[in-house]
Image 1 (spheres, rainbow, N blue to C red):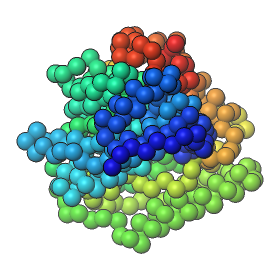
Image 2: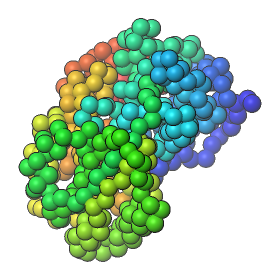
Image 3: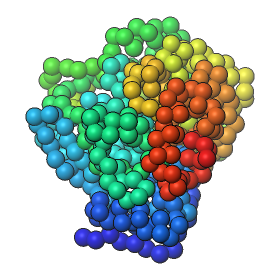
Image 4: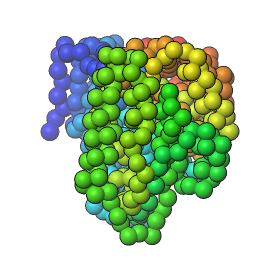
Length: 439
């Protein structure tokens, strides 16, 4: 199978519908050699290069007017190493395919985010994460990666081989090269018991430290205009497996979380004054439930209502104060917000531009349904997040720039120096990287 190259292309759009680009050409390489050749050809033609996954980023991190690399032929598992408990997977593999393939082999990642549509390289390059007391982002589970750099050479990076590239490229923003394969640490598949239950926001804020300390994975959703949250605690279990029944799964995950929620979003868009009432109803709709299943069936859930999102990582000890400020801003603002605020945590890690780099972090995500004006809400929320030295998710809406990031990332200069070395001609540059990393 050889790569396909098409000429002048239609417009590319992201999943949230808020970013569009018109690349000069698209390439779908079927091998690492073909991808390297596409990068060399782009250089000859004076074109910049970006790889794009499933478009789940809400920033223009993957947008280009040059060569757009689509990795859908670079998929599948290359190798499972049971001695070292690692799996090497092609960069274009969607997380859902990786999760299914690992489960068939009796293996699993340790932690994951709640959406599994993204490619492994797109998810890790932007710092996608779930929630965890000890277990960190997907990128923190990387043991090795393969990178096509600006001159078309292929670089293998591990803790021992090219360690300074490994430290940065696990969350590389597409700025250091194009990731072609990733080696993840895996473990024997295990069971998680999920306990979901409504809880008043004031109680969650008062007991946050205990809820975090007592659970391997704690998260909650707060419904603005209400004092209600839905909490979720996931902990390892000896079993037996007790999955959510198909009927219950349909009612909770499809009907309430996607179907009724979608209708509520439509009504809220048409008549914003109804949103506080709808929020009260939505927050009461989900009842408590407990179930036990393999990790990806507990960590991930379908997301059919399209939205736009901003998410910031603040120091974990600042999360309750930040949320109180967010709540009082919403109470004062007259804004009508129909989408819940999501709160998760991650331990400190050692990745140069990880949102949890060298600090225990809590994540606060704000959403608006696709097509509604989100700027007023996001601007007001961002002001609160940045006052706490927040670090935005690289794939979600934010206005941060290189000057700001140099202040909140202790190793920011290390990343930009490495980029100068690996991509001196800025082959992988775009407007987004110019803003967040500097020219």
